Amino acid sequence: MSSKCNCPSPPGGGTDCPSGSLAICRSQNGKCETSCRNIPEGLSRNGAINWQINLIRNENRPLTQNITTADLQFLSSGKYLVRRFGGSNITISFSSPSSGLFK
Image 1 (cartoon, rainbow, N blue to C red):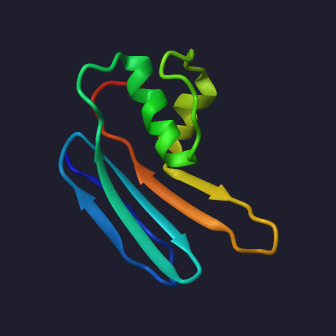
Image 2 (spheres, one colour):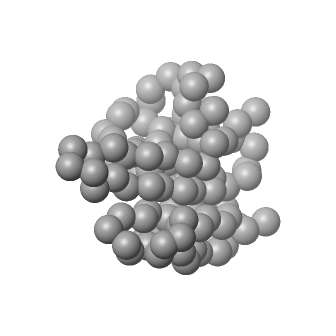
């Protein structure tokens, strides 16, 4: 099953990534930027989840960090809003690969 995401209109747009990929759509200043990222091989379950959160939120959390229910709910939500001073918010939609990571 592929991973898909869409940017809100305007600007609209989106991406359809291969199975096992993380789909990310960032909407800012009237532009939709999309990417498909493969989870690096050899990561533990926690490592794979933390890697995805790092990409989506632009964070630098350790790959060994414990996973909370809130982390799993975040990845299941498929949405993230970055509020910026001055109103230049970034809307991020994403689709995490459905590979049993959340069980």
